[in-house]
Amino acid sequence: MKYPKKVKNYCPKCKKHTEHTVKQSKNKTRGKAHPNSQSNKRKDRHKRGYGGHGKYSKPAVSKKPTQKVDLRLLCSECKKMQTKKGFRVKKFELV
Ligand SMILES: [Zn+2]
Image (cartoon, rainbow, N blue to C red):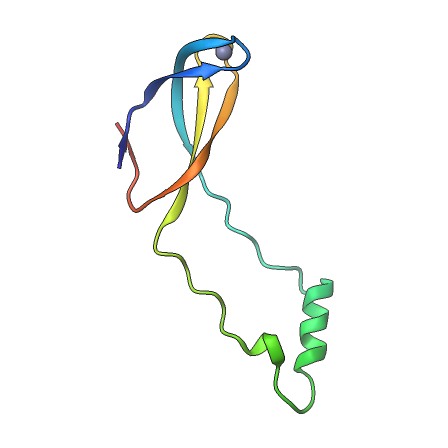
């Protein structure tokens, strides 16, 4: 998907439509839990000894085919940044 670098958008601070510059923010990937976190301790306790591992025997959730794109809009008048809700596209390009 191609997206223009400058768009006219409503700015809640200026209370009118102004020109915004578009920036793509990097998606934050969820980090791993700390090795000593409560959830990891629970997992370790569950995996000890005999028997199945219950819900911990499930394979990790597979990645989605598309990643969400997050856009930041910077108002050219008041320089306030606002976030546009993420949407899913395979390819994203700022033109
Ligand atoms: Zn503004």
